[in-house]
Length: 142
Ligand SMILES: [Zn+2]
Image: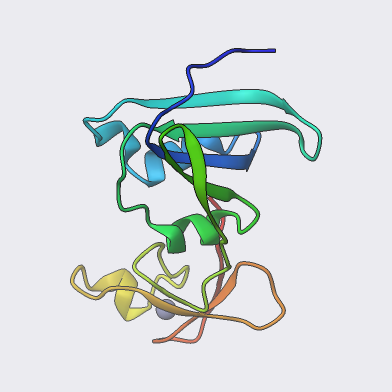
């Protein structure tokens, strides 16, 4: 088993489906952080077979909405004094602002650089979002 220095204080993003870790890393701009950050890929997992894990040695404001959109099954653990003090539940967000683009090329949010995209989750359909401006359905894929 791979040994990685455990963190004393910070955030562990666990149960990331294998292969998504790097994309999440980029999406959340973790490469821009000044704090120590590690990305572990293809870690053996009982549930997922293989998984990715991200460890951040700092208390930062994570965009939980963006993470929930990427995969609501991801777990976010808050670590203090080397122990988990909180496990945050993620959900697929009902409303999404600015996290991705409307697929309709004629949509105002596609044409106007200053218009920020806004979507509402289509009920019962995973990661399918209806544009609040043109009503086009866009499926979110990381
Ligand atoms: Zn639109």
